[in-house]
Image (cartoon, rainbow, N blue to C red):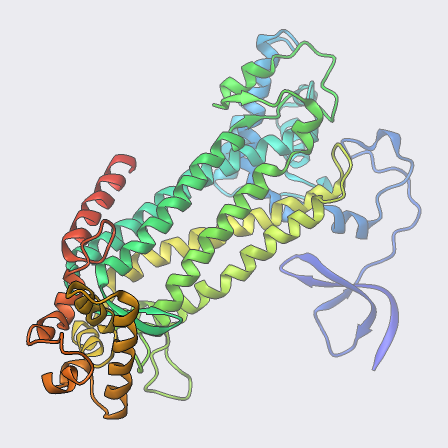
Length: 502
C-alpha cells in the first residue's frame, strides 16, 4: 500500500539520491523532507544578495555538483593560487592580501589532502566550498580571491588542469600494457596459431605478430591523447563570466604560472568550450574499443573449445554452483565497460548540441561523464597490463590447431603460381583440393602425392615442405608480415618506439 505523504526523498550514504511523491511503508530507505516554506533569503550563499527567498531544498540538492566535482579540489586550489599571485603582481589586490590568501589556500589544500574537509551541498560546488572555507580560515579578505574571475572560467580551468594530469597518467598506463605485450611477444615469435578472418581459420601466423597488432593500436591511442594535449593545455582563466573583466589582470601570467601553453583568445569561447572534453571522451572510446577487442580474444582463447591461453587465477572468478568453472570475468567486464564510455561521449554531445553561448547550467553535465571515464580507463589499464603479463600460452594447443585445418591452402596456390600457373587458375584448383580433402575427412598434409596430382601435374614432393605450418609462416617475409624475421624486426621497432617515448 502507498500513501501520499507530500515530498519524500530516498537517502543513501548521507545524501539524497532520488525523490518521490509516494511513501512505501516497507521501504525504510525513504525519509520525509519538509517542503520549504517561503523563508527569508539565505545570506550564507555567497551570491545571495539579489534573492529574497532561500533556495528550495530540493533545488539545492538537485543542482549541487559538490558530490562529484569535489574530485577537482586540487585543481581548484591550484588555479586559485595562480590567480591570486597574478592579482597581487598586477596590483589588483595588495601584495600582503595576496600572501594572506595564498597561505589560507595552502592550509585548505593540506586539509583536503588529509581528508579533513567536509564539503557542503549548501555551497553547491567545489569553487564555492573552497571560497567559503577560505573566508572561514582568514576572514573577509578571502572574498577578494574571486576578483577578476567567474565560476565559469574557474570551472573550465579546473577541468583543463584535471585532464592534462590524467591524460599524462593514462599514457603511462598504456606504456605498461605495451611493455607486457612486448614481454609476451618476445617469448612467442615462433609460436604459431591460426589467424582468422570472419572468425574462420585463414592462415597460420606468429602469436607474437598477433599480439603486436595491439601494441600498434595502443601506440595510436597514445598519439591521439598526446595530440589532444594541444587543445587541453589552454587557459580560460580570466575570461570571466563571458566578457572578460574590468580589472587590469594579466591572463598570460596566470597561464604561465599554471604551465599552460597559451590562452583562449576569445572570452566567450573560453567559458563555453567543451571540445577538449569531447575529444578526450572520443579518444577514450577508441581506446576502450581496442581494449574490448583484445578482451574478446582473451575470452575466446581461454574457452574450453580453444584452450590457447590460461589467464592467471588472480584475474578470474568461479561459479556459485558449478565448481569446475574458471570464468574470465575481468576481460568480460572490460568489454562491457566500453559501452559506459561510449555513453558518456554521446551524452555530452547531446548536452552541447543546442546550447547558445556562453555558459548554461546544462554544462554542469560535462563533469560526471568525464570523471567516470577517467576512473573507468584507469581501472581497465591497470588490470590489463598484469593480466597480459601473467597469461599462460598453450603452445601445444596452438600447434595442434594449425595442423588440423586448411589454413595452409593459400600456400598451395602460391606453390602452383611459382610453377607458372596463373593465380586465378591455381585458386580454382586448390578449392577443388580442399573440397576433396574435406569429403575424405583428411587434412592437406594427409593427402598423398597421387591425390594431389589428380588435380595438377605440377605437384611434386616439395609440396609437403611448403605446407608445414612453420614454413607457411616463415615464408611471409614482406615488410610487416608474420614471417619470423619480419616479426623480430617489428619487435625491435616496438622496443625502440617505447624506449624513445617512455
